[in-house]
Image 1 (cartoon, helix red, strand yellow):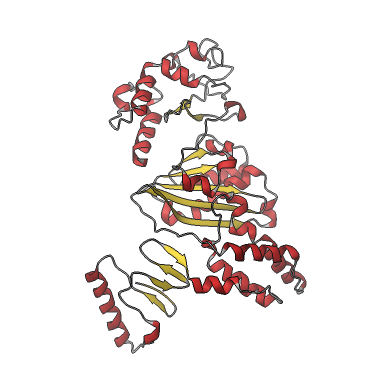
Image 2: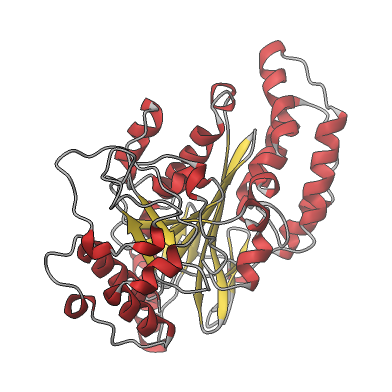
Length: 406
């Protein structure tokens, strides 16, 4: 049973449990001499309207009556009316976030509300109300979006969560989804408007803060379980493998250590609601260009559509012996077995354009890749790699995360 001021909803998975909850509820009403209005009550319903939302077995949708009221709203003529409008829109904002085919950052509710919020902020400063053309267009756009609203599904803790984040100049948006029963289910859609100070952050800071803000905002669903984060900002793929010199990002890294997740890169043009509603989560994660950054360690997807990922040793650089250093020209000539870590740990610099060929030449990696490509669920990395192999911990962890997804 849930209650909000004088609105109450009772629900259970079985009739007997529902009857018990209802019986105890009526006992409490009689005890405190509280009364219910008959025409506002409904019992034994397959769906119920609660706080402007329709709740049923499929999930949550907005009440059509509330949608109609918002679509008929006229532009505000005073600061008081504006605040009332903003409050009404915020109440159902989860249904106004990015839709099919829209980029998350620019399609999110917070980004679309920027012109309206600027009118509010200006009115708070000089106490004069000025409704702008930009705000009027934003309101009409939001009202049009009310014609089609998504169904927000209930979270299913038996399946993996996938969090997609994206930031624009003015806001950051996040979409939390799950895939099961052959369908992609929208669990939550959230967004945050950047303050004036936050708008001055660089792109990496905005994207990093977007991941942090979404994780902390959804911590009741994400904390304590493994999940996947998908970002279109390439350098953040290494945030759990390196320390950033940017002190702000480094502090946020520390806060993110409270969560257990794997982060993947997705091309910006594909980071839209349509892409992850129509495709399997993570299938568009791309092979990374090694020359794009210079981190202290990297995780790569092999080519030829193979699902195996491998960590490139972070001590492999120009200071490493030429016979063992990974370069484009020597990649196919050496075996991972011959590489041992030096006492010092310099910075990586390598070109991995032929990584798949290099992996297949290594007997251990070749066995792992072939088993994964065959669809086998009996992969045992521990029996393939010896204890002395420096790759074993990473590949064992990957094996566990892979089978936890499927």
